[in-house]
Length: 405
Image (cartoon, rainbow, N blue to C red; front, side, top):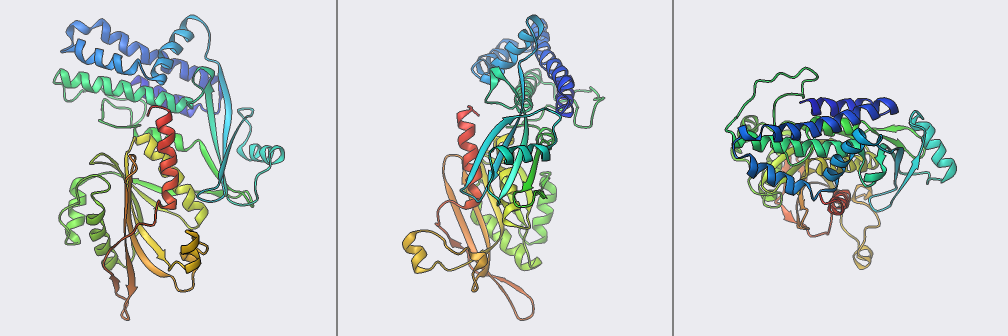
């Protein structure tokens, strides 16, 4: 619980160099003290040798855990961490065109001042979006942003204590948190970061319109997974059973549900479902008012895929459907997006991808009756290749592979 609270202290002091250094040092020392206490009391802990040895053997191979151990020793016996404050700048022109650069700036320099400095020194195209992400880096762990590294270290500790509780048949604790609502005795089974950690990290990123410097927001809201409420909602649409299986297997069933929602309500929002195997991890509602904010929303979704360690993703939403011209078929490309075609049709899509490269998509045409009723046609399988919206997801999975995540 102290580590959890100190992680938030690291996040809250992110733009104050001295406070950030002190908070990170405290976090790393407290993290190490937990395992030291476990070792001291191992004689009183059921099955300790088995579950602690498994943890030690596993984490010893991980770069971020090796860094945490060495950093604690460095802080106590040698010197502070060698920290570097930088900003990671991403320019996105379209789904395929992007560039990234990193520069070192004074920690208290404003984001707008950073953008002006980058535009003056490097030049950025006058279209698309610019994303600025503040980053603290230790020279001994240059491939990790330090707040993200601390979150990963914490989650390994969470898993160790969760397994230890299970081995001792301790289902609940009675410790009270005194820092924030999220700091409790709970030891959740999680494949990635805690929700509070993902939200906190997203606050370190700002988005701007390249042409005018206006601030952009990617509108996303995470829904709590409540099986009882889900069942009640499905029954209201005469669909009592929620589709099962992994992201790919659920596409046909989710299309049936989406069509019923569309016909009953006349519209359907965009929702992303994140999976670990057949387990549903998170549901994310997404909203965007332009192609620029849509790209930002899916970039944010890619970050959530990483923080939750999701290996499957299913997306439901409305779409525009167009007919590919003979020239486009010949060139195997799209010259005029469906949204800009005069004879475009309204549609509904459900598509899914998995980290191992599988993907599938179903679409149906939506028509409006003379009395205002909504009619969804029969679903059709689509094999149009990878969806543009999934490019950030596959890019993030590839980056995770390089970091052994």
